[in-house]
Image (cartoon, rainbow, N blue to C red; front, side, top):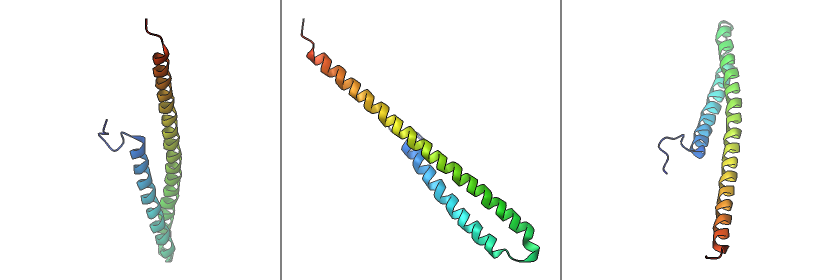
Length: 102
């Protein structure tokens, strides 16, 4: 079954989260550079706003890291469950082949 949207599979969601993490990191670098350039005495309010942006980007990056770990756990659990189903099917097929015909 082919996924209809980018979020129909765990792997595609992981790719999206990876791209989002890259964008967040790039934004953090740009904001840090902007904070460093904001040195004029009249720019104190702007600098505080930029620091708030940096703080919120750091929080977002932390949440995205958590999301990555959760998606990885879900992928691992899915693989575990699918493998167990395959083993169960193989066991049932083998057991059916071992039964004598009546």
